[in-house]
Amino acid sequence: MANLEEEKKEGEEKAPAGKGNPLKKLIVLVIAVVVLAGGGFYAWKSGLLPGFAKEKKKAHAATPVVPKVEIGPTRSMDTFIVNLADPSGKRYLKVRMDLELSDEKMMMEIDKRMPQLRDAILSSLTSKTFEDVNGIDGKMQLRAEMVAMLNQYLKSGKVTNIFFTEFIVQ
Picture 1 (cartoon, rainbow, N blue to C red):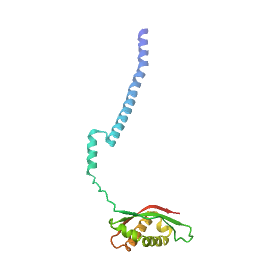
Picture 2 (cartoon, rainbow, N blue to C red):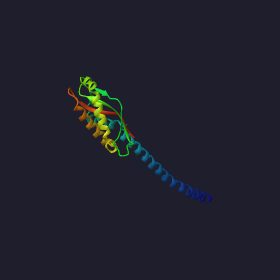
Picture 3 (cartoon, rainbow, N blue to C red):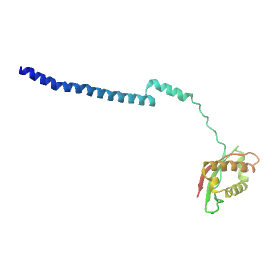
Picture 4 (cartoon, helix red, strand yellow):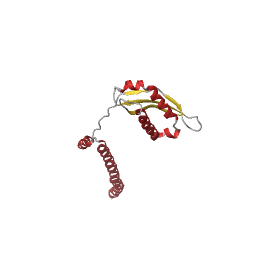
């Protein structure tokens, strides 16, 4: 009889341990599923899965290829340092630019007319205020004005673009 009581006590002690095991197994199983799902999602998003990598490449192949725009011949200009037309008179602009030309033949005409072109640029820049040249819109507007102004002096071709290589306002 003592053996029966001892077996019951051992059975009761093992029962709570038995109940804890399925709970622990369930927690480990849930964690394993979450980790595997996270790893699978990462592999899918990054294209590491072989089945999905082909589809990703096809999507990139469908995007149009943008042709590289060729730049015309360029002529560098010396640095311009001018006072801006601000009421305080304490602001100045330092600009260095390259002119993109329509063809190579214009180099000689640009060299010949350089004093006229520099004078026109200086006159235009000194009439600008800080608000006129501040920000990207101001620079784009200044570029467009300069191209139109310089093309008035040229006969054999034209300036197609101006690239600001240095632009400091202080």
